[in-house]
Structure formats: C-alpha cells, structure tokens
Image (cartoon, rainbow over the protein chains, first blue to last red):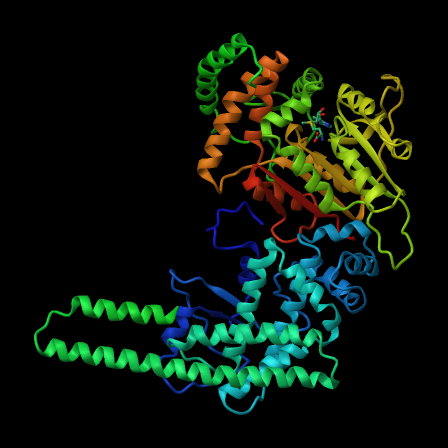
Length: 302
Length: 330
Ligand SMILES: C[S@@+](CC[C@H](N)C(=O)[O-])C[C@H]1O[C@@H](n2cnc3c(N)ncnc32)[C@H](O)[C@@H]1O
C-alpha cells in the first residue's frame, strides 16, 4: 500500500475489497440506493447472482460493499488478507474441539507450518476467528438462498433458520463465542455483523421495500435471531427441532405486533395529512401543524 | 510535589515560562523538514558519512550513532523517570499490554511442545520488555523453554539492565543473555563486557521466533536496514513487534497539547532532573520525526512482512502504537 491519504471512512479492508471487486460479483448497496430503486410496492426478488448494475453511492450515505463471490468457500475478497485467511481456515478446523481460542489458533498455525507465536499476525486473535465464522456463514447464505419458495415472510423465516443451522458445527462453542463478542471493545463490531446479517436476510428474501417498517423489520429480526441463537446453544433435540419451533413462535408473535404497529402508523399519517388538507382548504396557516406531523413520522421511523 | 522546596518550585515556574516558549517556537519552525528515514524510493545503503538527522539537526550517520549512544549513556539512570514524564506514566501500561497480547511462551496444551522459543529484544536497554516477557512465558504460561536475548547498541544501558536482572528468580536470570548490537547490523554483535577488540559474531538467519523493539526504533539512523535485519534473523512464521511513540493525529486538540507538553516541558524538566537538556530535546524531536502509523506499516510490508488488519494498534489515542508483522513462509 502506498502512503495513505484516505478519507477516514474508508478502511483498509473496505479498500482492499473495492480494489478486488468486479462489477458482476460485487454489489454496492446503500440505504439511499435502495430507496431510489425500490419505490415500487410490489417486491421483486433480486436474483442471488446479482446482475444488478453497480451503482454509485451518494456521498452522504455510507457505502457498504458486500461480496458474493462465485465460490463462497474461497472468499477472495474477504475482510482478511490471504495469510490471515490461511491461518484462520486452519484454526477453524479445531474450533469444534477447542473453541474460538488461542489453542485452536496455535494448532492451526502448526498445521500450516507456522509457529505458536505466528498467531500474532491476527490483530484480535480469538475474535478474528469468530469474525471468520460470521463472514463465511454470511457468504454461504447466498448460495442457500437460491430457489427459496413462498412469501417474503416465509423466505425470511427459512433463511434465518438456514443461518442458524450454519452454527451447527460450532454450537457447543457458541456460548463462549458470545461471551467474547460481548467484550466491550468487540461490541461495536459484533453488532454491525449482526446488522449486516439481518440486512442480508431481508435482502436475499426479496424484501426491497423501504418504508417506515424498514427499521422495525430489521430490529425485530435481530432480536429474534439473537434469542434463537442463544436458545440453540442449549438445544439437544434431533436436528434442532426445538430451535425451529422456538423460531416459529417468535416469528408469529412479531407478525401480529408489526402488522398492528404498521396499521396504526398508516392510520396516523393518513388521517394526519388529510386533517391538514382540510385545514388548508379552510385557509388556516398549517406550517406548524405540518412540521409537527412530519416530526411524528420521523419519530415513527426511529 | 507538595514537599518541594519553595525555591525549586519558583525555579520550575520561571524555567517553564522562559524555556517552554523558546523551545516551542524554535523547534516548530523545523517541523516541516522532510523525514530523516530513507523511504523505499531511495534504497538505503550504509554509508557512515551519509547525512541523517539528530533530532532536527542534520548530522552524518556515524555521528548520529555516537550522539545517540551518548544520549542514552547520559540518561540511562534517570531513564525510567524520563519515560514516565514523556508518557505521563502510561508506558508501563503500554508495555504490559504489548507483552500480554504477544503472549510469548503460549503453546497448545493438546499438542506436544514445539522446542524452545527465542525472543530477541532489540534496543532492550534496561530490560523492561525482557523481564515482562519472561514473566509471561515462565510464570503465566508455565513454559520455561523460552529464552530472551536483550540487545542494545549501548553497553551502559545493558549494564543497568543486567544489574536490575539480579532481582529476578534464578531460572529467569538463566534464560537471559545480554548482547551489544547495532540493530542495523546483526552480523557483528558481541556479548556484553566482552573484549571490545575481540572478534564479533553474528545472529544467524532464521533463528528468532519473536523480535521486539520498544521505544527504540525511532532512534535508528537507518530504519529500513533494521527492518531487513529483523526479517533476516526471524524464522518463517516469526513475528516482528514494535512499540513506539506515534502520532495522535486523530485527536488534534489532544495532539497539540501533547506536543506542547513534550516540546517545552520535557526538555526543561530533563534539565532539572538529569541536568541534561539536550538529550531530552533530542528524545522529544525524534518522536516528532518518526513516520505516521500508516507509513511505518508500509515500511514493514516493504521489508517483506505480512500484516493483519490495518497492521497496527493505537494506544491512548495514538500517542503510542503497536505494529506487528509476520515473516511469511517463502
Ligand atoms: C528509549 S530506550 C528503550 C529501552 C527499552 N526498550 C524500553 O522500552 O524501556 C532506547 C534504546 O535504544 C537504543 N538504541 C539506539 N539506537 C540503537 C541502535 N542503532 N541499535 C540498537 N539499539 C539502539 C538506545 O541505546 C536505548 O537503550
């Protein structure tokens, strides 16, 4: 890398990813982009092969490059450098037995002819091993999303379930992993990984609507996912049936809740604006009222 | 502080008023000079008459080495106090963190031991890093099969370190060795207190697991040469790790305050504590001249190392930083 004079928002990793990106395997998505391209009410399901044109991100919105390489098992555009990936891949094989730990990392280092001390290549050791798991599972979901049937809701359910099954191999170690992720210095990165996953699930399920429910949908799926993941770490049932039933119940609850909320919000904004129109037609100055009603809508978004 | 005599307090006050202004303005004019380390665009050669910088002065390389040596001879004793002043006492926390994250001596429990681990602590001065390494490896990781070579260009620093090491448990003392070495040329080194005219030896290629340098590298006249030597002596898979004062540029206000403190107050206090203003002035300026975190990371990569993540970790808002790199296989 040459001496950097980069805007602070561009991390080295995101740059590396940008540098490696090819339009056919890379999709730049931003909230702004979505709101532009998805104003139609009928959701059309984007194909996972992602033939959508690469769009330029508007400046005020953060660009979030996301990669769906043809072979998810060889993530060449991963947020890790090739030497890091080699070490992580080798160490990951030891996770079922030794956890997301220094032990697994050192064993992995030895497997590929490195030294015990070589694990210092990784900036955050055990947490990097967890990030590797999150990253590879997130990528694998793209393949799994092909050919899903049913409504958006059904597909969101199915994708969430498939992602949970991605923890199967390491489920005995996942409580430890959650404890590491909850360490203060790792919380921001852990939360953004969760956010990215949930975002992917809605997207891969074909939900491209941008309306006030955008945030509620993501917030509720995050909550469901986190609780189901935790439930699964204690689930001894065959094929994790109980986790699946748990997940189903959570989905049903939220289904009722969010449709109620959605209906209320719609009613409020509709009746609000029609009330303003009535007042306007009677010549009443409405600046204050309309700014109030706008504020209410913004609050509803948050 | 409270127990200080009124006379000394008055002296401190006047000194800080007059000296601080002078040193700050006189040095800030030279802040824009080009950096003194050779970049990868001009392949470094060892030429004793080549101009380099001593703080903000231009001197020849050989002169710089002599002057650096004399700086550390004059401050060897009051050296800990100086570190405390320059880092507000943080350097102990940073060193602890540096050693704990490197975790020397860690070895998988579920597998057979992999033979001795050799740590080379360059510019190891008074042994601060080496002693922590031994504690982490021998005591915390229960691995006595770790030895540390402390090396420094300056025998008086090493002598202070060796003296201090007498207080360690015997097994740890036995795991230490002391070596006079210029980091830029590890092919001619000699054991501490050996005959200065006797033959020199060489640190062999691929013989070191972990190379550390803490608060030393900014003093080297030829940093790329030192990095190349680090690469040579490390085994494939070996780790280069550097702890150094750095740039807190992300926090402009903090940085400005820190700079003002270091440029004005430290040399002045140095004069009062150690009676040697110039030495401290040099130390402060050498910090200012040291490359940014990103530039130094790039120099490490240019020397043949691979780095993980962005290649460095900022400590205390970037007042110091840890850089790590691995020598890849092949
Ligand atoms: C500030 S001290 C650091 C000592 C110790 N590592 C610590 O962290 O406490 C810097 C040391 O670098 C040494 N030094 C300067 N130039 C050197 C060189 N070219 N090769 C080896 N050591 C050098 C000095 O003699 C001095 O002991």
